[in-house]
Image (cartoon, rainbow over all chains, first blue to last red; front, side, top):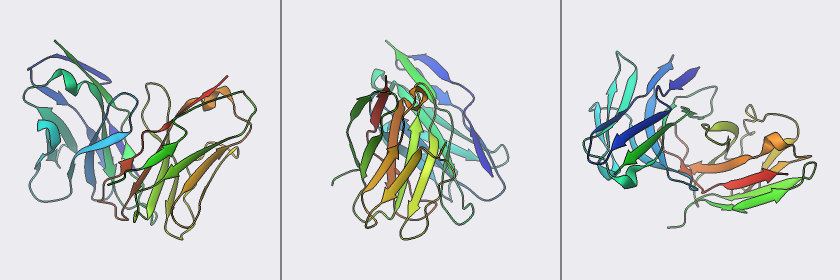
Amino acid sequence: AQSVTQLDSQVPVFEEAPVELRCNYSSSVSVYLFWYVQYPNQGLQLLLKYLSGSTLVKGINGFEAEFNKSQTSFHLRKPSVHISDTAEYFCAVSGKSGGSYIPTFGRGTSLIVHP
Amino acid sequence: GAGVSQSPSNKVTEKGKDVELRCDPISGHTALYWYRQRLGQGLEFLIYFQGNSAPDKSGLPSDRFSAERTGGSVSTLTIQRTQQEDSAVYLCASSLISNHQPQHFGDGTRLSIL
């Protein structure tokens, strides 16, 4: 079984400030990790993914995330946010389960960027 | 190229009616997923199709929910005798088959039950 915990339901931040969105996971097997972004009235879009190799992963729109195996975390960061980054962010973990490939999503973190 | 297409984008219906939601996945994607997203909530897995294998229906909340995937492509999610608690956005996603392939999502169908 696997699970994902996004510790913050809402993160308010001012424009041009740095931000970190937290994600912790649990799994009995090796996992692949993803961050998705959802803008209003749209589906989810992939921001970045960790499969293997370097623990620092860079994604689109200036976002990056660091995989920490010992802390079972995959926190998302951006050094300077823009108003347009206001959206819902979902962390997801994927591992083989019962022969099918069904990722588990966190409950989401709403990033609100203020001018 | 074309992404995942869902129709209708919005559906309003009366309690007790049946509804059908459609998903056209990306061509070549053998895996197809349906999720439910209630207002302000995360994604709730409903059902997963992979090629010609039997679908994983473990997420369907009741026997009023069913889904089909014809010819390994288009999928239809059917909700019978709709209830107010069925009001949500229903998202479809497709991917290449592998647990390290990301999912590609449609924009969803917003279902409102009056």
